[in-house]
Length: 100
Image (tube, rainbow, N blue to C red):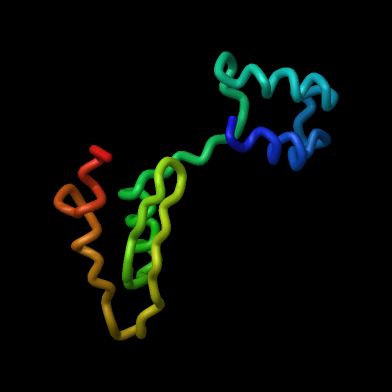
């Protein structure tokens, strides 16, 4: 429900006929725990690191600000270089222990 205000403000009802009018959409949204109708961003630190690595960026730092924020500082590298992000990746990566 942390993004409810944003969702209610920005949802394009003209593209979602099942939502009905604004009041119906609001009522449905307020019952999200029952119907899971709102869009959710589901990332963890491992997935965020893998996305940045996939873009071939060199990861400089990763910080986690609980409960919602993952900050990754990365830089673009020369085409002839290869990003070495192994200390952040995989089951041995410091961020992928999944016990935080």
